[in-house]
Image 1: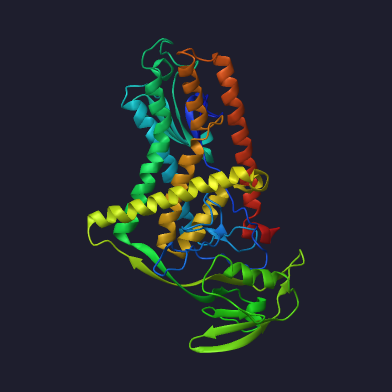
Image 2 (image 1 turned 90 degrees about the vertical axis):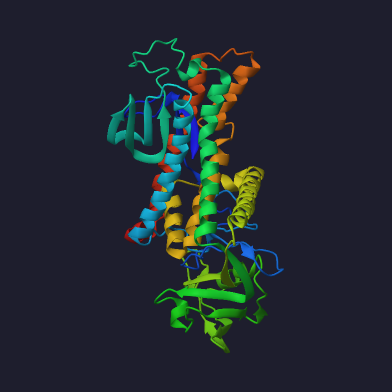
Length: 447
């Protein structure tokens, strides 16, 4: 969720006198091979064994690396699948809650300091529904690119005197820094609260790895189904290559061999129940010439739950998990900037985020908890970047004012900087919505 100053009207983008939030996340920097039609289940992140934790993928890269924590990326077709209506609503609910929490942070930071607030909106553009209370307009808007809290500072329709001490622009620098930072702080607190709730309610998942790759699902009428592979099978070897205990490349090793062998027999050593035997599978050929067999693959692991014995253990578990996820988000952001040319094209908008959330919601409750926590942390970190249209950009302008001895930049220059950032974010958002919508599986089937 990106946050920035901007002009607020009922049908136009918000202005430099409002804080807005948009959410765009980086998709997995490793392209998803087109030969496995179903996504991986999100992995749990704690290990009983001494083997190093591993990380596999599902669809959207939420700005954290393939390291020690859950990873919601997918070895699936390069499209998204919304799945059931219930899972879509759950994912949309998570995203909406994060937007509301972020904007509530800004709103409360202003309200509790006596700073005038004029608008609180979820979404941008034309108003779909609204009500007024205590001189604040609360609204839901048409374009789901985030939300904003509006201030009457530069509103030409406001009858508040320009020198009113309770306008945000007339407040001391510290007051404004608190308001600008409050959205990020709210997301961080919310992320910890989600993890703590997970620890208390369902516990943290613990993985015990085993050799091979699990086949959780087989697509009907696919090559795998035609040649006898069944859900629940464990692939122990492929073309005579023994698969090790779960490791960083065990799934991709299977995927790579299948990709390189369209219409050529691939021999799989399979464990089914207590029996081991070989199955020959002939991958179908994709439009790009790669092979596909139509299965879902995941690490072969047994998952148990780690539950706290008391509230102190709960805080300890939640704290370790929180810092681990935060480290991954920060490290992933660093990797993104270091490989920007490769990752710039992997930004995802709200459609893709909801699609990933729906996929995770269909999988496990654990995954939905972690998806929500990671999304909060991602949005918090991204919003701190010192770029126009982000909280960090607004914060940079205030700190620049402090460095200039309290002298503000000319209002026209400040508005030009922020407006350019806002326009870029809105255009990017519309582009991502169109692109990600066209990547939805049912849309691709229609086309």
